[in-house]
Amino acid sequence: LPRHFGIHPDQEDQYCHKILIELFESIHHDMLELSRYDVNCVQMGATLTLAWFRRHKIYFGHIGDSRLYRLPAEGKLQQATEDHTHVGWLRRTGKINEREAREHPQRSVLGQCLGSGHRYLKPQIGVLEAHAGDGFLLCTDGVNEGLFDRAIEEMLRSPSSEWA
Image (cartoon, rainbow, N blue to C red; front, top):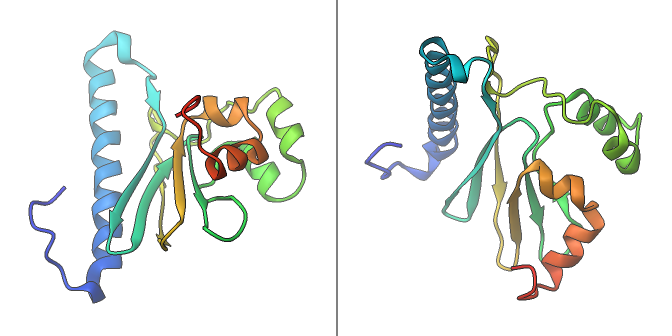
């Protein structure tokens, strides 16, 4: 990331978007290069979801099936990122529900990830407003495979030292 963050607020959205795209492209390129020189890394891929907190906004970048959730102080849990899987698309378009998605035999087949020989890279880049009392959760697919969204929301609303 650049050393100088003193940009004008009017240019912040465009600037942060560009930085995140460049970051994803750089990681993707490095992973592809690594696979060319190390036989153990051929077809190696990774998912990435990151959040950059700046001036009451969350800039995020995402690729794969890890996730960013937003829990507004008032309101329901929202999945901010889209799973880059066919099953994720089926769920977003209403063709299957959450239970069907978690039982689908192809639920972990990625359409996009970093590395893994993928030539085409289109990470999801976005921005969310952050208000006092909002909660955010970044998690791997292991969390959302093990817990329904309802359970994730309940845990975030009533934090306990047992799971923190």
